[in-house]
Length: 478
Image 1 (cartoon, rainbow, N blue to C red):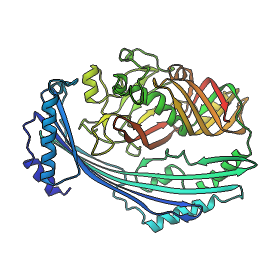
Image 2 (cartoon, rainbow, N blue to C red):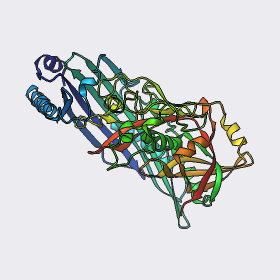
Image 3 (cartoon, rainbow, N blue to C red):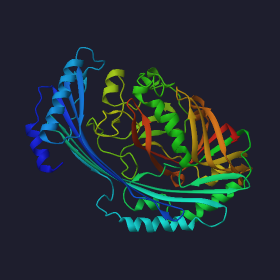
Image 4 (spheres, rainbow, N blue to C red):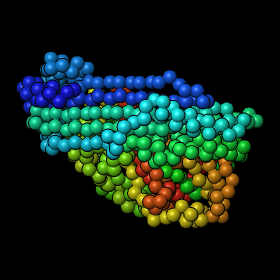
């Protein structure tokens, strides 16, 4: 939308609702890929539209439209207003008690003014790493790719609030498959979808993309000739690219307040966490400190305001192992009478915001990686998620990783393939016995967190140091 149209809309859109808002989203994604040294077709996705929200008394109404003319937006606002009136007498949420957005502002991803390479340059970079992965005849498939997404959002309210946020997301990917003697193993750069961040070309350096082709291929060859992971209780050293999934599934989803209130029970399940747990429940050992942190701009889900117009700030969710607050936006906070965070987020213009993770991070500890390894008598190091399963209470889980390495008498030894582990969220985090320092910390993100009916796929970020858990049930794949 042009600036002149936005200015006109502030003066021409009309509703007799107590409050209304307009959220316009424009997004474009370019996918470049090379497979076995052959450039793949360019894929471009472009989308633009608006969500209108109206509050009338206790009720609220929503209407989305791809017609961004003044007439189209006015029609959607009238529809939202009608729906708000219709729900006022039956709404579970009293919208008269919810604070309206009170602050205008803006946000930009880092280096957003830095120009991006053209397709030719992207393909040259990808072809270089793809070719570099062809180090052995046992390498049977090599893929290098990068996804670039530009997203712009403008949020206006009937109270005169305006919020502008501009994002650029970069996701480099590399996958190498090795096969020998009937065994096939895949090694990737941070998992299939784990290497998402905001910024410019510096994101490639953040994930070590340059030079990754040969390195990832070498590790794939290690795995194809490695023995299967042994079974039994062991100490478990998880590296940041696997901690991402552990945080996501067994802290992030259980702490979503709308899930705790039962909103997901017919789809993705409830949570073992209860409202009365906040402020007293021991979620993990005293070493566990977890923050909701939308402020570090290089992380995948950083922003200044959520999609309900609430200013986003860093908050502790778990402090010294004790559960402090949920992942609940303004609507869920009103329902539960609990303080939450600014995490009302929508996947696009045609979805209303719901409680979502954003950047959910484990704060660094004091241990070096060498110290953590040296203190393990019988254990295993695991990297990079490849499979996951968790029950509908987000409690019992099982994860598989791409790469494992045994730790024996304080030293890294044999590489093993298909390492898996399982546990129960309510006790697993209490067995956290070491948290790595800043030097062990990694920042990861994914664009494919799913939740809600209708489904919403959204971007989240997770930063974590390496962590050690005691007495974990470890086993090999089939």
